Image 1 (tube, rainbow, N blue to C red):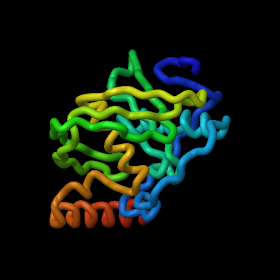
Image 2 (tube, rainbow, N blue to C red):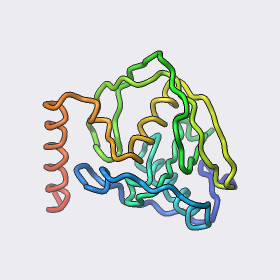
Image 3 (cartoon, rainbow, N blue to C red):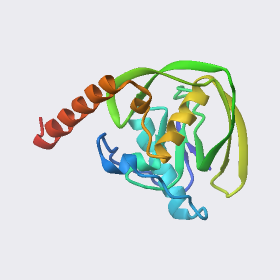
Length: 186
């Protein structure tokens, strides 16, 4: 990977992609594992990083940009001068702690909506990097929350699924209204 300013390039020019807004059925689909790492996947990773940083966000999953493939990007450093982008292909949680933590989560596919979600405080994740090498890392704090949130996207699950039905319905209605307003150009 080549560093270009505050961005990381693997295959050249990057493009921001439209982010799907809930309720879009593609956000509920289960993403397919990637059999190999191609230049097309590297370009997708570049585009996803560009889209995530532009939004701005700290994580993005393939289904959020209409790609039903098991790929996520994250950067929980939140420092434009020292980015720590991480691309994970076919990520899986192989261990999670019994200790729990609560973070106020949001989602680029559910803009301007936030809620406290309880998840394991630490997780160990295994994935392929963009060279096809298996990696694993134990994560805690915001990194652990973010990677769990993004892997949930690959399984068709949203952070609002951790909320009670009333709050979930309220947020879904707000997103339906937002989509109607955007469609009308308001």
